[in-house]
Image (cartoon, rainbow, N blue to C red; front, top):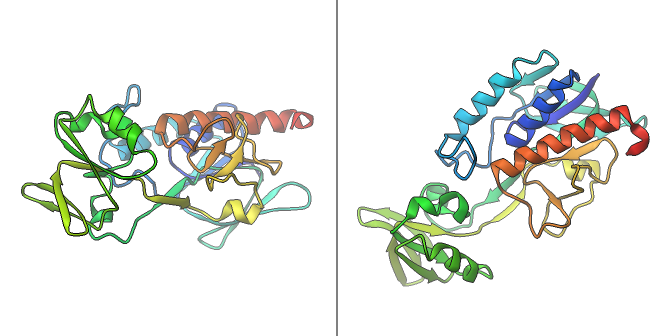
Length: 278
């Protein structure tokens, strides 16, 4: 019986495990080795880690976690999570085994749903981006296209002082890397640029919120408070799969995910030692 089961090996899950490990709480971290930011080769806008490869970041943190004997790490996905009548959890793993825990921290993140647009998935995270804070500076003085959306005005304003030119394009029908740059087509029209900003749909990367009957927000993310508590006692959620009511959207940021993981880990511990406060 672990005190905490942390599902997800990205920044939120790693930080939650580190927080619990420092308090000497028996913790199991499950890492499926699939990550939302896997397509990118560098993270940005993160103090002490600006420009670092996400894989290197994860390796560094896992090395830090290894210093805490109370944390076990398995490179294995969870298949299902069940809350039992006594309030503890039984989690089935991909290898057929079952682990028990007093609490569960969900940190499995979101999955971007690639549109049926030729070339889009191949260029996602390379020349097709979502976040100007993460990838705007790298396009300084260069040509940029922005797919039309309700947020296009904000993106134009933010990127205007950074890039050389901005062109808004209607729904994109194809993207293709050419010697001259990224060709972005919309019907019969096309433009060659150095980068495209677009916002594909997303979904929960794992089924655990539905399995546990967690309250969801209209954003499609798990409803949590500032402490990472969900609608089900003993279940916490951290990272971009979760959404605090006071924020307009889930925060897709490594730094925000790590902060949320720290809060969820600390909240799980608090509720273990002071259950009446839950």
